[in-house]
Image 1 (cartoon, rainbow, N blue to C red):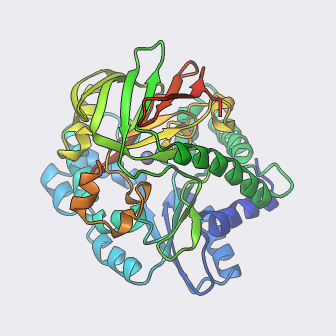
Image 2 (image 1 turned 45 degrees about the vertical axis):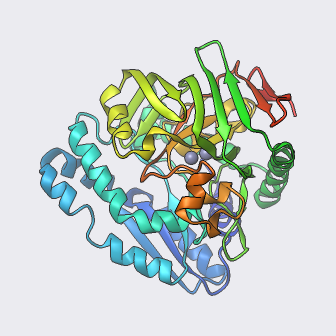
Length: 411
Ligand code: ZN
Ligand code: ZN
């Protein structure tokens, strides 16, 4: 368990390093009702550091599940959440910063109709579209943090009592969040500087392709978007104020070129999406598009993702993470993207972040597309970085620069 002081430091990290809330700014905390105590602590800290107003957007995963089991598909699609669009409009207009607490039960939709899940998810994505655009383009500053819930902890540590599982999760998250250091904020600043040094190396080389290969069957050439830029940890909001979108974060990422991806990639960790577990899957690309896929576990759920729209059939992100990141070293499978994507190199189906191309926020949709940037209502990360993965960068003159050997950075 964390001490009270550590909990307070955690909430402060979310406000100050994560969202980097400015004095007199409005804050929106997005959370499940189970995490209300931590949400309240964040609200308290936000006011301590000068928030103008704090709002909370509640979710309730128990109700989500009951709805999925018992409500008809037509009703799920018609009324995903009638309050969301007007709330989101207000948040965008007032340039709030967003702090999300991610603590989903990975099995919340276990046994529910995949067709209904996909339809409801699509409906929700549609009403969240404007908010998603505002965060993905860094118009709003935002961050995601996580705390354990009983349902989630039970999935991660199935062999122990629920309370022991929750305690073990707190210990793991406390270490990963560097809350066991004397000054977590200073520890984060140092970590962020290391990530930025590597991102600068990648940007200086301006690679045309990234080649990933391992013994599990991955052999994939990922072309990079024209004028792409690698981003790590801290990003800049459109107003020039830095923030850290994911806490924890270990990744350095950029945009693939959505017409220059060829080969096959095999997942390294299960993909948990929308209450479904998808595992032992492989995806084959030709000229940037998925042309074939298989999955031993959760094939229908994978199909649900890959049929959401046209853009989901290409990639919007490539991210590199060494196997010695604290999350990878914990050896814990969290069944939560925030952690698992930081344990392993990953790719994402769907939308790319406009910020991963130079001047991206000032380019038209057409100009982004010319550069190979991908658009979709989805953005779904999946983990591909095994302990034996080798990764090279290939520049425009054909020079090959080793980046990873046996799952770890060599630069
Ligand atoms: Zn990522
Ligand atoms: Zn991603």
